[in-house]
Each structure stands twice: as structure tokens, then as C-alpha cells.
Image 1: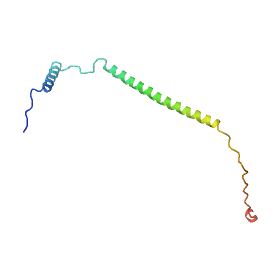
Image 2: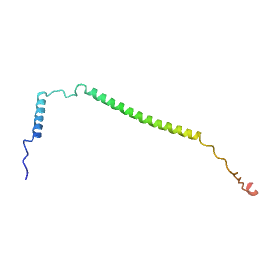
Image 3: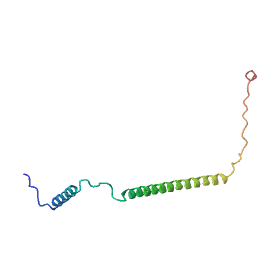
Image 4: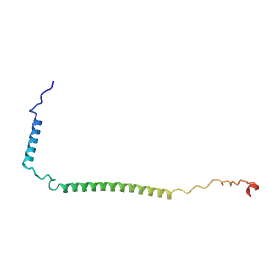
Amino acid sequence: MTLPMNDNDPSTESWQRLARSVRAERAQAPGADESAPFGFATRVAALAAEKRREQLVAAWGRWSLRGAFCSLFVAGAAIFWLHSPPPAEAMFEVPDLKIPVPAAVAE
């Protein structure tokens, strides 16, 4: 069983009123200029430039931070290398390994 649609629905009535007003407006001005409003292109260009500027500032900040960390790493490595203790001397003499070679092979 299907229920009949409610013709008194306020949302449907407002939609119909809106559609009628749009049709009436188009009927009154058939050759109306449908270009963008005054200043629209300027606002869009300004927003795009601002967005690009924000992206450049964010990229500059990221790369600056990376550069600072790399500089700290290099400075730390240099300080560690400069202040590292000298290599320890051997506690005993390393034996000289001379392997005797037979005279027939040496020639």
C-alpha cells in the first residue's frame, strides 16, 4: 500500500517558489550577462597568490629547519672528532711474521 504524497509539505512549496522565481527572472532578461561579478577575478587571483605565498613560507620554514638540524649534526660530529682521545698505544709489540721460503721457490 502506498501513501499519497503530502502536497502541503513546506519544503516542497519553498522549492517550487524558488524555481518559479528563477524561471521568471530568466524570462525577463533572456540576453542577460552571465559573466562573473565585478571584482571576482581579482579576488580569485588574490586568494591564489596568498595561498602560494603561504605554501612558499611553509616550504621555506621546513627547509630552514632541516638546514639547522644538518648544521647541528655537522657541528656535533666535528666537535666529537676534534675532542676524541688519541688512539691507544699497543701494550705489547706485534710479532713480525716472516715465513721462511725455500730457495727453489724464491728464484
